[in-house]
Each structure stands twice: as C-alpha cells, then as structure tokens.
Image (cartoon, rainbow, N blue to C red; front, side, top):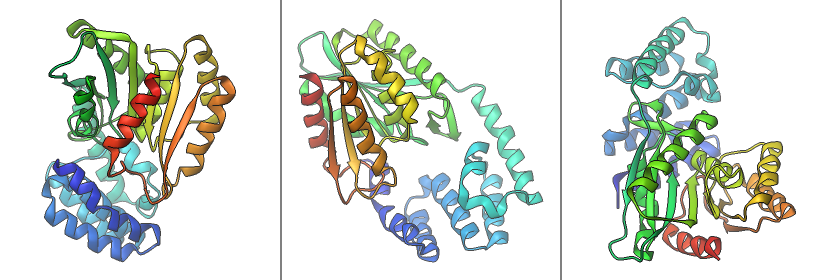
Length: 313
C-alpha cells in the first residue's frame, strides 16, 4: 500500500481529536506522525502551526513556521490566509514577514509549473479503451491519486490521472482556480486522445474532494464528453452553479455517483447534489458510509467497480 495511503489512514486519530476540540491531543498525534512520516513534513508542520495557534501558543507556532522556511519550505498565501486556525497569527509582523517569503517562493515555483498526466493502460483489453479520468484532491499529486483508481485497469479501463499546475506547496497541487483547472484537464484529455485509442462514448471523470467538485463540473457542463462523474466526498459547489451546469447537461446524457462520508462536514451538501440533479433528468446515486470522514473509503475498489457499472449503463 502506498505510503500516502497509510499516512492518511493514520491521520484519523488526529482528525478525531481535532473534531472534538482536543487540540493538545491532536498536536501529540501530529508529532508522532511527523516522526513516522518525515516525507509528509509539509502537512505535519502545517498542522503543528495550526494546532499551536489554536492553543494560543503563538510564539511556538511562529518558531515552527520559521524553521520550516529555513528548510526551504513554503505554502501558498491563500492557504495561510484562509485557514481559521491561523487567525491568531494574522497581522503579527513576524507572520506577515514569513507570509511574504512564502508568496515570493510560490510565485517563482508557479511560473515554471505545468500540468501533468500519469496513465495506467490495461494490459489486455479491447480497443478503443473506455477512459476513466481521475482528479486528485487538494495538495496531492496525480501519482498518489492514481493508486486509488488504477484497479479499473483490470476491468479494461484506461485510467489517466491528471495533475494540476497550481501549486499548494512544493510538490503538492490544487484546483483552486476552477476555470484554469477545467482548461488544463480538457487540454490533457485532448493530448491523451492523440496518444491512446479512446472510446469517446465511454468516458467517466472521477475525483476526490476538490478534484471531485471539478469532476462534477466537467461532466455536467459538457467540457468533456463524459457519460458521468464519480465524486468522492466532493468539495462544496454553490447551488446556483450546480443548477446552471445541470441545465446544460440536458443536451448530453450524463449520470452521477457520489461516495459520501457520514462524518464529513459536507455531508448535507452530498445529499443536496443527489436531490437537485434528478430534477434536471440526471440519474444520481449516493453511496453512504456513515463512519467515513473526508477520505476515501477503505474498500474504495468495490465502490469504484459499482460506480463504473452504474455510470456506464
């Protein structure tokens, strides 16, 4: 099992502490995660800064941030500005100085960042291939994302994980600018069709979290010839936008499949998606996991198989 999947499984204890307001407990778990997964320092350092800030240990939070910067790290300014955990740091001269450093480093890295594509081609399958496009969550990569979706290759699907050019921090990518994200995915799709035999009548777009929200957009608004979307605990979408996209989907048959977590703060939104889309003639099914948070279910391979069957019918 890939290291990142193990890491996120281990973070559930920290998340549970955070959700019940036990920030000291969450900080202790984060310390253990940092020691066990040194390659995840961008996340664990950020969580430490957030938790120390929550605990009103402002000086210590700033020291951790400075140490990370001294090691060459940076985070995109919107991440530092939008997280409510960091509110006690906002406006402090040291924090503003370090945010400026992050802004400069981010701009330099972003200037040379490009979208990418990681493909899993089925070993034995009838051509042209049905295509599953997979979109990573915020602060992830195409390679890490592919590990969740690549079991579809055994069912004869060409699986293509698209990576955004938008950097969240070094080596981690996001779909924050949705218009740019759509443009990049459409461009990678065109490139993919030039390199592989793709059955354009059997295209599914899937994604998790922020990538799940983009998958819904791409399938509904017709920017991809998608038969449907598979969204795993998708990010929030304004109702007005969802209805606007669903209205355009009347021009092309499309279906939706959601994997929902009962412990995800967005649980109510997942239900709304499956209530709204059928009113526009779009079949939508929700697979509910009551004990799941904002994560992939541990048996996602089974969810993927069921979703592809529903979306392809």
